[in-house]
Image (spheres, rainbow over the protein chains, first blue to last red):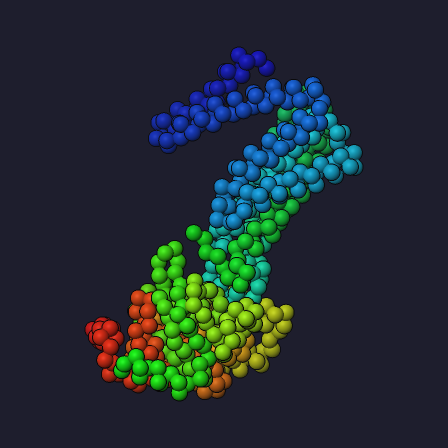
Length: 250
Length: 252
């Protein structure tokens, strides 16, 4: 695809802009920002990837993955501002998920230790892990607030912080994992996953593309479970004092 | 009644809880200011005052749901921090104002204090405690959703009794109830006090109620204790602030 044809695709940006303007949705500014950002970010990452793939240097792979984790952490932590030390908790979770998934992939020789595999898969894993972290933190902080009475009740009856928060914690973990599991039930029937579509458009054998997509789907199940659970168990103790008192959100 | 009289009377009681110059604040707002005083062992103390006087905060300090910024609290002559939190909360039970419930049946809620300890509660024991608060045993299998406000408060009190506390803290449990339910709860407070010999501290904003049910009363206003003494004596208070509060009550 040439840059000329790509520029024609801006029609797809124009349509929502016109709609937003006529219906006074006030989304024009955000749409333009999103468009400009995605053009700049994706084009620059394209050139960066080209460079990294050409040099095949592990240092660059490491730097790329680190950059992904840092960006994802900064994005996700906003949702958990009320939890102490949330930045390092999100970062530790993302690092752990990345190490776990890559160790399995590389250890069992499922994917070769090459930049194109490590970076693309890491991008999907970290990206999904970030979304999961945001979903989890959103739900967890909402549950905490809505059910503060219940937490206090359990503490008042001589329950431990873990008992006092258990129901809210599992609710938030479950709620954040459901979209991942549900979307896998209809995959292929309703939507064709982006990565698979991309491979097929680029001329890959559809069955080969499906195999890779399955690998990614399974990977994302682990990502979802580990992210929510690890973040949950790292977060809840900071909500209580040494004397088992609930620290109120300010 | 002068300050000196209050002191002299205090000595006739054995304190179950003693506060010594306790302060508590949230973000620079003083909720409790320099609280000193005792709650007598085995008696019903009523804690009366307008809303915002710091009464609920004071109760939560007693069973360690909150800790004071400064000052000391003694429970049964032992410093509060020398108790393990779990041990303290089982010894000093609290029925919270909103009577929060976990989902499920009355039995689920009655068993909760035991479940938290990895133990079980027999239906007989649960039924006996329900009987203490004036509920039939067939309530055990009712859903929490089907309870009225008064029934919820009664279940909340019965559930607090499961831990066999020696001190029972009752937050403003009658505020949202009608006259009949309020009267029932007043009666069961006296009954529980006599049957179990448990020290009771009961919050109310109604002075008549405080005098009628209490052996001993604390009057609080704006985070301070303005009067303490035998409940009977509050009928003719000479403290100006208390008088103003009594007047306010009369106008309601």
